[in-house]
Length: 463
Image (tube, rainbow, N blue to C red; front, side, top):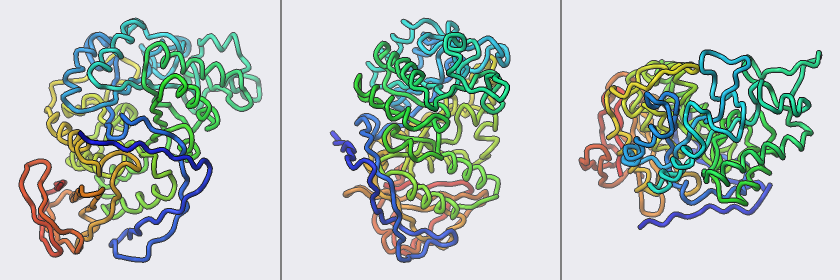
């Protein structure tokens, strides 16, 4: 049985000096490492999240019925897939006033403590959570704190809780015309009401935490006090849909989004960037966020799929290579529902548009990655995983290569980030030993000078 270490950081507000390996965008040569000031988080992440991956559930589109009860039939399959955290997109009643499309956006919340009747009842959801827990899953809910539907009761009961324009009219954030913008600044009654709504689901449905929509548009101080209030009920896991506000990661959130890496992957797939650009991203990432927090990496999610295209539209033949990347770099991998059967369609956001489950089944691919993550401490989340360092080759712009190590466990990863086959040579005297290929169980000897060949968008994961 493996032992997971729980990260407990007690130095609130202090800055740690962390030495980070210097990576060059053109060739990661050995240089004197720079010193960065890195913030320290006091968040205590639940132990069960340390080696977990996450699966996003779109209840409306998951089954023909689009209900909690119908989704429950998929729990055994998802258990076999190896995911641990189930993230449910908002399950609340959807506003009718200014609604977009026929069914509206999940993110236009009419009542924070009720269930969308299209999905079932509160008791149905509570039973689903119980079944998920019995099978070893954890459940987190999508929470939309920044705005409500126009017909939420707060609009009439507390009109002062909304932001207004110079003419006194309630405003919508951006072009999200189906929602009304809440006013968090100097508004403690709203903070208290919103926190109580969040506590409701932890207390009454026994959920395990939240994915918080546009978290950076809500003050960090609100999330800080909400985390404390939720933890008084049970230890929770908090995921922020944000990458710009590092203050969110100091007291409130365990993880946030790796949007920038996602965009770099899309650009590499289009030939606009190359493998060396990844090191620029990780160097920046390691200088901004606490070591104990982690980014969620993905090749698709509900926003990307509906608005920017499937992973096949954006990444072409590189989809599996980028999935391997998202699982093996320091971070937290996401599967969006349907990816395990190579979902080739953009799911309509405001209408019923069922997932096509008849696509090419690559569940085995994701199952291998999920098992690899659980079995290898080097891939555990946050500070619990192993450090990552570049492995030097003679083709740093085409091959993204790195090693991770924790105690006696080692992992070497080589990914061809081009649409052409590449033969390359390892130029790293620390690449030494006999390893096993995770995907085909073949043994591979690594040494300084070893020559390897990868096909277009090929990958080699060695343990």
